[in-house]
Image 1 (cartoon, one colour):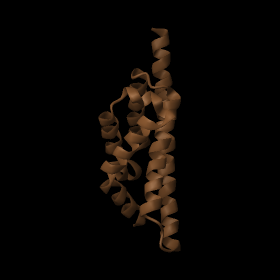
Image 2 (tube, one colour; image 1 turned 135 degrees about the horizontal axis):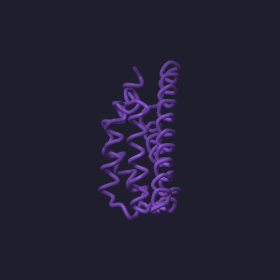
Image 3 (cartoon, helix red, strand yellow; image 1 turned 45 degrees about the vertical axis):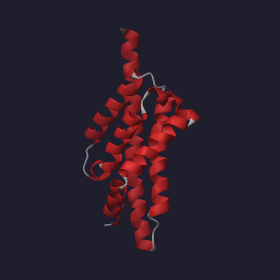
Length: 148
């Protein structure tokens, strides 16, 4: 129940979270490689993730997550965004979300806290897979170009 409440809270504020993340990606020195991508494109990409987070966490399969982030890795390689910037961008997207949850959705009692921890474990697993599949496809695109 609390998981659904947190997901709905995040999805309802997906637009502002996406704008905030796009801004961070363009001003953080660790993600300078994202400057080749417009804020609008970054906002659109992250808005989709945040506004559909419930679906990603609760009903998407491993294969669907792999497909999404394989595309992200390949695209970022083609855009010449350095891999370390890409990984830091995913970390920033998770940190942006966690910061929002800390400000807006603190637990009132023990049961809520337990459910929030369960939700955060789901989030961690999702973002860990996002990093893995993004890096895997980025490196595959890099190897494919080196062979060609």
